[in-house]
Image (cartoon, rainbow, N blue to C red):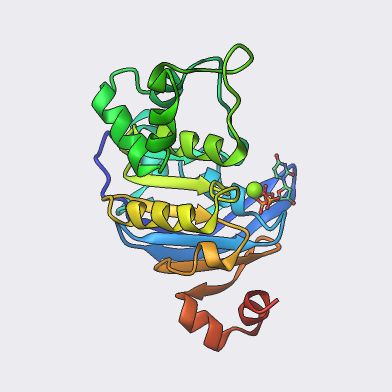
Length: 240
Ligand code: DUT
Ligand code: MG
């Protein structure tokens, strides 16, 4: 069924395993449309796996996953993926112009839409400062982007698709604190539910909902202040 999502996400006891090994265990949370979810947890705790379940890049083994009130299995996969953008943990740029790299996957995007996405991703000024601007070649024959520039280009590529759900997998780790803050403020202003996987609490402390993962389980969830007061484990990582 093709349906236009508002962006609400609901996990009900979702479990996921790979080759018989449990990766996520009975994950439950709810986020309303347009809100921001922060996910933290040590390496291997299941953050990437959790994100991948939403556009069905991975298939859960148990539980229910609803977008709005619809179970994801009841939706057309193409329509589902058309409304969800994921910025993968490993950024892939290809040989081609900056403009082509941002428009990749959405060939109908106009130049104005590409610029708007780049502005939101805090990369427009940098692109504009290049001698060839958006026509600059990336890759072996062209310029080499820094880690943080690649991350922002990759976020612009996700935004140009105008998603209802945006999944950022450790996509701000190479940004300085000031740029990251401006990016998050811009994302807050979009009518889009945003999931941000991060390594530092400072990257996600303004999120409406924070999920703390540990060995595939949510060991704490709530807003920053609430978690600081009520969860010793969260308090300890914040102060470590
Ligand atoms: N896993 C596999 N095969 C895969 C992907 C993951 O066995 O292709 C396992 C490894 C790990 C668990 O799933 O024990 C969770 O991995 P995930 O990549 O979801 O963890 P993460 O929290 O994203 O780790 P990192 O912070 O290193 O990105
Ligand atoms: Mg990961």
